[in-house]
Structures are given as C-alpha cells and as structure tokens.
Image (cartoon, rainbow, N blue to C red; front, side, top):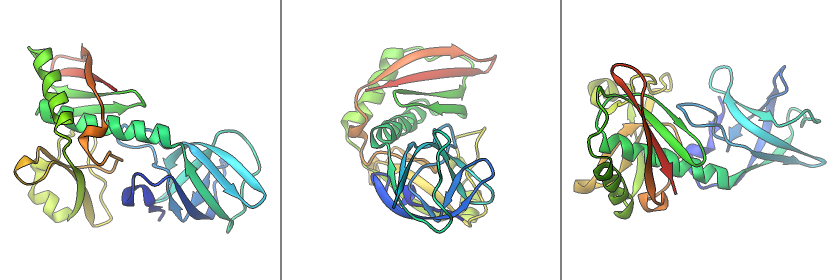
Length: 238
C-alpha cells in the first residue's frame, strides 16, 4: 500500500520518498505519495522527482495494483533504482487550482441538492452532472448563492467514519456513479462549515482548500442537456 500524503496535508509541496518498485510500463511506485492519483473526476498531480544524480518530470499519477499509486514519467528517461531515496515536488499551482475547483463543486452540490451522476475537474473549471429533468429556472440566483458561500469563508475540514457508519447513513453519498472506496475499513468525510453553519458533509478522497474564501469568484457556464433526466452544469472558477 502507498501512503497517501496528500490526504494528510493538501498544502504540502515537497516530501521524501523511497522507490518500492518500477512497473513494466516505466511507472514509479513509492512508499508514500505526495502526488494525488487520478480518481473521482480529479486529474492526477504532476511535478518532479529528484534523487542523487538524477531528476525526472512526472506527468501524472494513477492508481496501480492493490492500494499502490504509480507515478507516470512525462518522457522516457533513466529511472531511479528500487530502494532509491527521492524528493517529491508537485506542481503546486496546478494542484491548488484543482483544490479550488474541487471545493467549488462541493458548493455546487449544495446549491443544487440533487443526485450527482458524474463530474470532472480541470485547472480552471469543473462540472457536475445531475439527475435533473429541467434546467434551473434562475441562473443568477444560483450563481449568487455559490458566491455567497465563497464570501462566507467557511472552513473546510475532514473526519473519518467506519464503513458500517456510512452504511447506516446512506444519505451522505451524493454521487450515483462513483462510490466511496472501500476495503480500508474507514471512509473520509469532507465537511464545509461547522456547527450550525455547516452546509455540506460527504465522502470524498480528493484535495480541497482550507476555507471557501480561497476559491475565488464563481461563474456558471453552460447548462447542457445530457439526456431525458440529466443536466450538466459547468462552473468556472476564479
């Protein structure tokens, strides 16, 4: 299993690591990954690995066999040997943009409290697909609500529950297409707001900003018809 350092501190930009394995495709498996692995609509992190006598650009990170994370080099170059001590450096600007967009999509799921059928994150925008027969009647009101959530500068925090606790509270899961990963015995919850000002609580393994004020201005993009019961809502960040 690869330790997921990005879950411990999404703001960490540099970390040590040890090479545990090299895949047949030329991927690199570390004992602990600062790089988020592509999942749940969020792209994997990019950046660099350095070690004595070498350096390589990392294009992305993906999930490997079991609970491992595989770092994918940007181009064919000499790889660190198994057992090498490396320094991981993520592309912080890109990571932070993903954090802002991901948190903004949580706010969108609050403003539109409907089942989510899909989603995608990029560095400048994101989208959620909703089980929604008709488009929202008042775009301006929806956009104003989202920006009010940002202006409130609500704290974003996490906690953990057991899989049994999640089974007892199925309403926490908003996504129909992607279910929280199981097998580790516990599920990570992301909370926006606290106490009486809490507006959202749902399972999520992505990276988020610490407060909604970091997101910046939000603008609604296109609302597209993706089927009889499905609407895609695009959200532009910053």
